[in-house]
Every structure is written in structure tokens, then in C-alpha cells.
Image 1: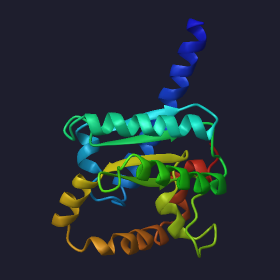
Image 2 (image 1 turned 60 degrees about the vertical axis):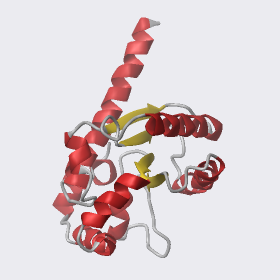
Image 3 (image 1 turned 45 degrees about the horizontal axis):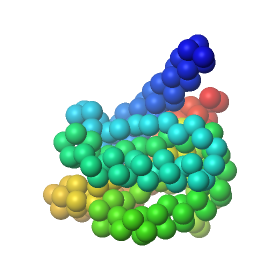
Image 4 (image 1 turned 180 degrees about the vertical axis):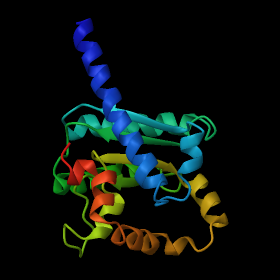
Length: 193
């Protein structure tokens, strides 16, 4: 039993390391999210692996993560990222699951307090082709549910020059990547896992 538990822990640590590498090299390294570097440096981003295989379990995990985030100060935990290891592999399934997430936010009256940012290895914005570079802005090694504090986001955005330009700037940044850049930054997409 202890051997099985230690294997799970090792696997989850490897998954967390993959996502941390993506955060450092892509999200922070390419400055896709201009306000991610400080919480990462301050160890205020909580990463947790969800290993279940059902929507019900994942919703329970999300609800628990929201309660924990709300109970802690921003100095202790600015944000939480749930890494979905074995569920919602299909982007279509993931996208449909987001409706349940929105319903949970509404039901628990968290709109205006918490918001959800979404990432998936096959993320595709409406009106794009699957291989369009702009989809890379939301592609991650695993399906992710990223909980953000609205108050913190508003504070940062109020000091950031021209926050409306962030999405367009990010798209241009992705379009400028060479194939070598893509292989280095997105090995889970372009170089095999």
C-alpha cells in the first residue's frame, strides 16, 4: 500500500512540475499573463492534481478549492490551479463541463469574488482552426481550472497600461513563434509527451 501511495505521489509531483515548467516558460516567460510572475515568485499559486474520473468528483474538488481559496488570505494563496490528470481529455467534453462550473459559481454566489480561467491541451477558440497560433495562448499540458480572485485581478488591471490589448498582444506573440520555439515551449503538443 505504501509503495502504491508513493508512486501516486511521485506521478502527481511530476505532473505539477510539468505545469510549473509551462507556467514559467510560457505564461510568465512569454508574458501572456503580466500579473502571474509575482504570485509565482512568492509561492502563492497553489497547484493540485485531480486524479478522479467523473464530473461529480471534479465539481466537488472545484467547490472545495473555492472554499479553501476564499478562506485564505491572498498573501497566503493568491490563486489555485486544478490540474485534471485523467478526465476531460476531449476539449469538447471539457468545454461542456465549464457550463457546470459556471452554474456552481452562480449557485454559491461566487460571481464577482472568484473567476475561472480555462486551459486545455486542445483548447480552441470559437471561429478558429485547431492549428491557429492564437489557440496556443490557452493550451497547457493538462486540462486546467484556474481560480482567480476578482479583487486581485481588478487591482492589477487598474495599474496595467491598456489591459484590453493583452489578448491581441498574446496572439501576435504566438504567431511570431518559430517551429523551434514551439517544440521547446510546447513539447506536449509538438514533441510528444
